Image (tube, rainbow, N blue to C red; front, top):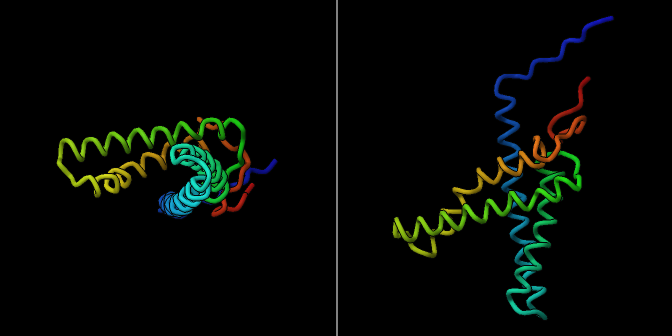
Length: 154
């Protein structure tokens, strides 16, 4: 019986991987914003604006899930992850709302700028929470999955 030694990743490899994931997450967020807005406009052509908003949110969440699973985190989609995914987004929306209230009411930040600042503050939290759902224990993990930036070694 031989013992195989696994190569030691270079210093900073985990940081580069996390940075790459975060940049991919941001790119998916930009695409998802376009998907939401396009869906909203399309459905608003024949439904009231709140109905169009609700439908567009669902469409965007499904697209976001699929893009984040495959492109951002390089993991397999499962029903468990799909069902947990909205929890990460709800947390993001709650954090965004709380940040908006705090910025406007306590710090008197302009109401037109406050949502952008709150969104920037919430992105890292959302990234980590969704990473936990899609890659970590919350989503059941992914034994044997190959990340797009890594090759499988054995």
